[in-house]
Amino acid sequence: MDGTPSATWHGIVAATLRQNDVRLVTYVPDRVLAPLIAAVEADPFFTAFPAAREEEAVGIVTGAWMGGMRGVVLMQTSGFATLANVLASLVCACQIPLVMMVSERGTLGEFNLGQAMVCRTLRPVLAALGIDHHTITRLDETEFVVDRTIRQALATQAPACLILSPLLTGGKRFPA
Amino acid sequence: MSPAMHALHNAKVMSRAELTRRLVAKLSDQAVIGGIGNTNFDLWAAGRRAENFYMLGSMGLAVPIALGVAIAQPNRTVIALEGDGSLLMQLGCLATVAARRARNLIIVVWDNGIYQITGAQPTPAAAARTDLVAIARAAGIAESHWAADEAEFDALAARALGAPGPWFIAARIDDQPAVTQTERDPVRIRDSFMRGIARRA
Image 1 (cartoon, rainbow over the protein chains, first blue to last red):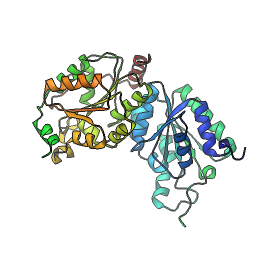
Image 2 (image 1 turned 90 degrees about the vertical axis):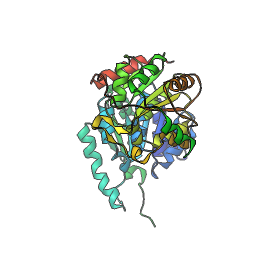
Image 3 (image 1 turned 180 degrees about the vertical axis):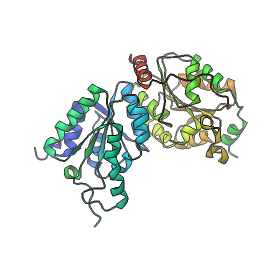
Image 4 (image 1 turned 120 degrees about the vertical axis):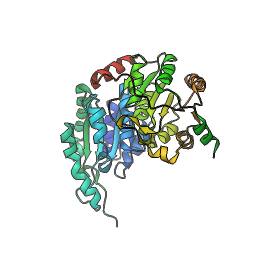
């Protein structure tokens, strides 16, 4: 498998999105997500583009789903922290199967106190809203977790959040 | 003062309810995303359409939701109806719309310079005499226009419904309260909208 895209976490995620016909990828960039963003931007199967703000990306994917196109929103932890209102008043209220992928900053070697503080809000906000979430730490579990999470979100018309742990992605390292 | 600023300050203050009725009267299978508050209530009062999505929260997201529908259904025209205060919350979306070159998207903004539903407090844009059409044009939406009066609104809406966009049409409107309110069942509204646009245009 070495050398093939599926040997990397981002290759597995991109392939699993494709298997589930998730064509729309909106994101606010993040260093850790960069290889996944590059992969979907380079693949004509996907319609992938940045939004100016995470809640805008959620609005776009919600509209697309209502119009018959599946999507996913990529962001980092601090971006998720801007979303409580749109998740509560649009996504949860309207039962939108929004799939979010959050690259987890603020833990396992964070160097920015602000990121560490905001990380503490991630799981409590998801719990308060009753949004299913899974933290992916292992390459060998990535396809299963991503695939099953997308399928369950669609089948139950409920949002879900996948948290990409530094254990999976390597995270962002201390500046030299 | 720039030509655009003249257009703003010379524009007639019109009835939001009447302009909404004029817009809805021109529609066939277009989808409409109604922004929260009186924008939505007047859309509801102008006649229920299965192709209308009536937002109940997520202030500022009428344009992003409409852009998503427009991407999913490129052969259907999608209209975002939004208030000035809501748009101010999410100005970045204008750059996203321009970047996507969303040909089938029309943004209509009702500008009365106040947060009407929360007690008619003036917006910062009203205090600064901010020109939303100038912002939209500078964001990259070339077809951005003030409607000077009802006749020009009709003409702009007709042009927008017949030619590639994205379009941004703004009208100065009054502060009359809406005559009715939408139903408050989000799942029912969402389901009705999805069924209304289920057959691809």
